[in-house]
Image 1: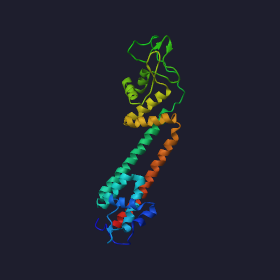
Image 2: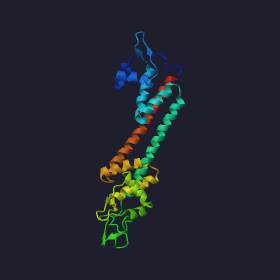
Image 3: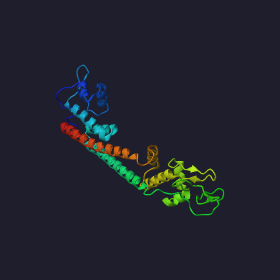
Image 4: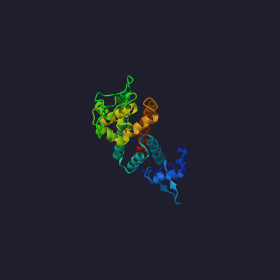
Length: 267
């Protein structure tokens, strides 16, 4: 900017650092990174800052909580190079990311609400022959000597579960290979048996996949569900997630105020 080194009260590095609890080395690092505009030097070689540098430091530190250190650095570099439109574009990118994070949270909450059972499910046994399917098959619909291989509340086989979700059994096998599902094996037949928690995880994965989320993100969420011991303990995590997004949005407002003040001072 044309007046980036305007004159004024001369400040030492310690004068900029002390109000923010920073070290003088941090201030020098910020200047070298382009976060602060270049400083004048005294005849003895010491850096000499002005109120303009103090405003740049305030703007950067205000931008960090809402935009992150890397993005805040890029914004300040653009401003100090006179590329204000580029700085605005970077700010827009941060706002878009915040909106996407809010939509992700809404999707997760909606999905979790849909997973809460309204009634206690009973054992799942599908009609079929009284003998197990032949070797090398896993239809999940047979019984052995009249005893269902799937036992326990909500337990089911791969075939009925895939049919319930409207997907192919091969998809469930793929999710198992990536760690999304962890069905046990029946000790007599070797068939996959999905208990109530497995069914919950499969439904969660199915809903999020329909929403376009990659398997890596789904795996992380399912790990949280497992670690929490179910859906209910995640309520506090979701509240914290809401709180972090709100704090981030408010920090963006604070950062915008300080950045506007710095832009006015730069002229």
